[in-house]
Image 1 (cartoon, rainbow, N blue to C red):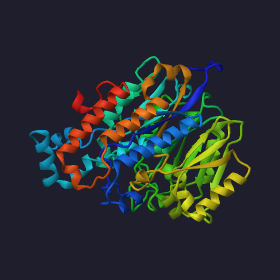
Image 2 (image 1 turned 90 degrees about the vertical axis):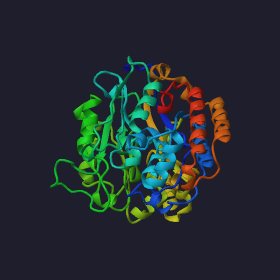
Image 3 (image 1 turned 135 degrees about the vertical axis):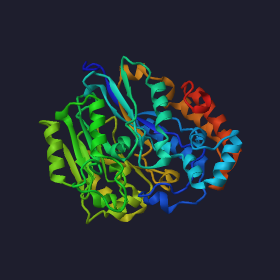
Image 4 (image 1 turned 45 degrees about the vertical axis):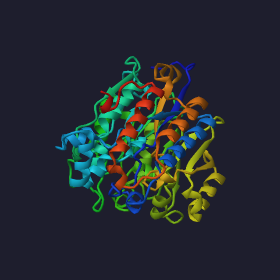
Length: 451
């Protein structure tokens, strides 16, 4: 708990390291980029190095930056649950031959998008004054629904002190409590250490079919899941706001709220079509926020279409506060390559609002698989006391950056096709890499092969 004004509080970006089996299998229905690039050869080494470069760049801007490790893939524990038996090599060969689609799903490196790892609530927002973590169940996609057990162990190995941190089980699997983590959750505040407003965006009501819902693509987050997280995290009802995502934009490929809106401190940057009842959403947020005005920056459809937003991931940018208290948009290179989006961003910087610069980063390996800069990070608001109580080995600095670059160059392949995933040697290489990584990051035993 940190009500003491002398204690500084930070927003720490925990970015996922792109995993050794990063591949384009097109597993994510409703994610346009993921499907479009299925069957291309991926470059895991380049993907991991691009991600690390973005992390270091943000750390150099004065932001607090940390890393989360990739998960073990292929997931042999799951394949054995599904009846594939024998040695590791036999399991891989049988599964890849007899059930190639299932095998491909167990090889997904999607854990790199740590916006989906969990939902966190800072200690200033929770009744018991602890930071709360709930790993997302990601129930809508099989290849992601298998992530939560290891993600929970990783989070518990970083945030170990139960005086400061509270961990919850993922919500029950199944469509009714589909939970996609922080990709559908934003927090607003004046300063990070203040009591904030927690904003949950959902795609449908699971227990009420009379309400609107998307028809073409699934709504991955339910109202009931968002409410459950708020209960678990002991949030104040007066400072918790729920909003339904516009079903039409889900059907246009906007599978998470962070593909159509992004918020930071007192600012919400969102597309005109993002929410079902925008006027009510903005009124609810302002009422919960209190006397100070919020900045609502609406991007009109006439200037940036939904299609442009999806293909450039304009809203999957990070909105961050720099040392001078000015906000910057951390955008993927695709935003500069699209003239309409570039012109719009130029107009935002010129206008009277908290955002005064745009910084462009190349995360193409992630973009081609359906995730931009904001997908790659989980925002964790921590006081300096809570940072001191967490695992110091995961925080980015010059030494860790160099160590992780050497680690990637030593262990990762330059090219990976779907056929390569069935090579048992890839599992051996990946496990060696991950075993070494747990030592670098001082995580202990978190992977099934280590337990």
